[in-house]
Length: 219
Length: 160
Image (cartoon, rainbow over all chains, first blue to last red; front, side):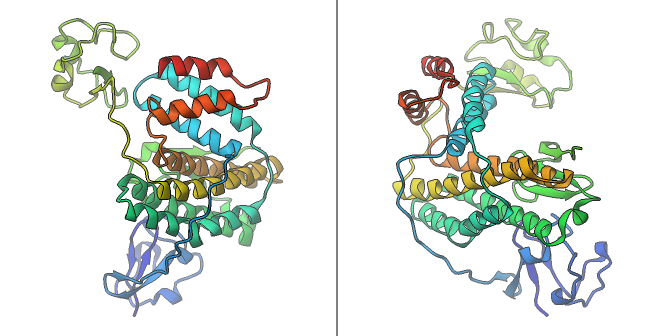
């Protein structure tokens, strides 16, 4: 029977072992796991697993290499991200005054970001990233031996998959499948964890649990 | 280099107070007084049993050079993250249930972190870099709304 690997945290589901923590008996094939079964380590759903071709070896995934032309203008959301990132840079240097100035500039652009879009446009943009954008960026970063970019892409691709999985679950099952769960976001990589308490370390970027922020449910 | 204290790690063993030759660690705001901290001294860093103090450089080396291919590929993803943030904000503004708005907020927070990370690895790692300076100058040159905090941009250009 085939083993399956979680694309988020690297956990391997081995039918010979099953998943005793979720009451899955040994000998259960991956295909026979219930639809609401999730990764016992990071909470990723079944769609985020891929079959291993043979023990220990992930299957080759096709790579598209298209790099598109760069338009001159960048959006308000992109400006906000550059500026809030520079604010974070100063926070890490314990320079609160300069960080506040960058935050002030970032906030100006945040107020200009529109509200165009919905779940469908969100998932369409994620699909664009996951079916081509990340693959092209990985290839460019590998050719340039850019280990910083490779690190960011590794985290970002996994987090994008989790975002898509959350949106997909909500589109399919609506509010009811989230009623009993809390929602946490990792402040270092953006990983979204659904559950009662965040994992001891982030399954994507390995920071400790205190770096997770809980997003509370309002009225 | 200036010493800084990570309050989350500090367990108030207070050996920094004991070893500091200038009293820079003796403050009431939890931080170290940079006017008194000696550039080449690391007595507090070595003495702290919780590893809560480190020295932050005044100057950093430049970020690893970025090729045009990497910048272009990262920018393509950044544009997409911008659209995703808009959609996440729409979920919060128009969501008709508390859970829809909660998920929209979590997704926006998540997208912001990925977008910031892409910006970092597209050349905007350090605030004190020529890239950050050029970016601020470009914003000041652009046509801006009345609310644009131009003073903040100019003050940062002075301090970078």
